[in-house]
Image (cartoon, rainbow, N blue to C red):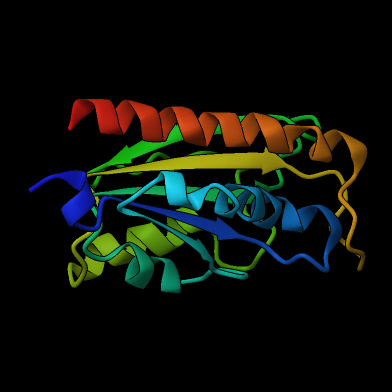
Amino acid sequence: MTQFEQKFIHIIGIGNLTRQDDGVAIRVLQQLAEEKEQYPGIKITDLGIGGVDIAFMLDGWQFGIIIDAIHNESLIPGEIIEFTLEEEQLPEIKGFSSTHGFDVLSALKLAYVLREFQLPEKIFVIGIQVETFSGFGLELSPRVAKSVPKVIEKVKKIIFDLTQQS
């Protein structure tokens, strides 16, 4: 069975477009969706503010890509961090948190403990450091907006690498 006949890659963005930089992942998804026809076997989902629903969304997929706005005081706005989760090896990252109450790592840890989901063999996580997310607004700050094309390129590279392996 090829990647085109199964649930190959699920790209999930977490964020809120009305909370300024918190919407950065959704902006990335919007641009990726414009080219979605190029990627058979790939689904793109705006998960809103996320939470434990992330386990349901990843259930049964071979690979997952999660994009989220993060807040870490040691990073500069627009800075991108990446890491990969495989099997049950979830990293402990001090100071890493989503801009929402229940972050991606906590949701995935819960999913692994419950063992009721068939999570992907590999999950790629891309976090974008926010500058402002405390008020309301539709615009991204300039430094965070500059990260959008960089994240899109990272996602495209992951897709390319995974399709070459299959």
